[in-house]
Length: 255
Image (cartoon, rainbow, N blue to C red; front, side, top):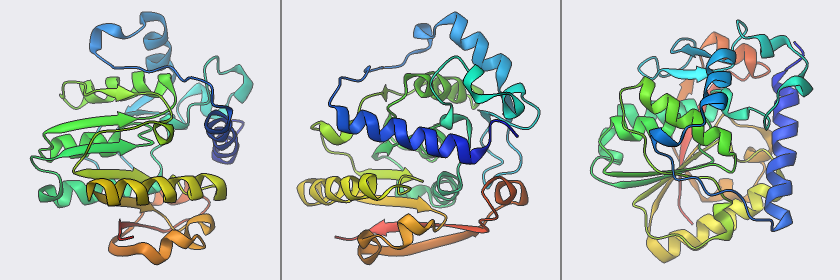
């Protein structure tokens, strides 16, 4: 598979860290349906597949990269946009989304920040569970478009999407912060830990983290500040696409 998950993970990690360390301005995108670039929208629709199978959340339809898509097999450098890590439904995000759907009181009537939103599944799950206000954050503007398309797939009005490095900005208070699959690199994990701790003590916000137990997460100091909430057995397709990871868990941050 030319467009392997390992390739996408390493490239997207590098891009994310480069953006964080460069200090360069990132394109802020407040998404509404009319803002979708027609050419880019058509390309994403042509080269992704709408699916709700093989994940922990069959209630949610997502436009993803699957084995039936050309770029699952095509050379990665032929993809004309930024690396589509948003086109994979990562296991931490699956667990987080499942948890929100099963425990709607966590977000019902509350404001939610989905940090590193990717395909937007956790934000969509929060909206389905009755969240009153949602901000999805991802540094990739293409992810902003993908999230908007995924909202429409699920019969939801698109919520605001901010595509800048939120760790370098001042944000207002949210009742709940959710983030999945973000602890894949030690430097990024350190930055997240510091930002989350400062935000928690400023706003007393509830923070939920989804992760399948990657070594970078399990060995990080933040693990001593987490309370285990739920663990899920990953569906077979997700296990196969993630080097045999079998479970994914949801944790609550307690600094």
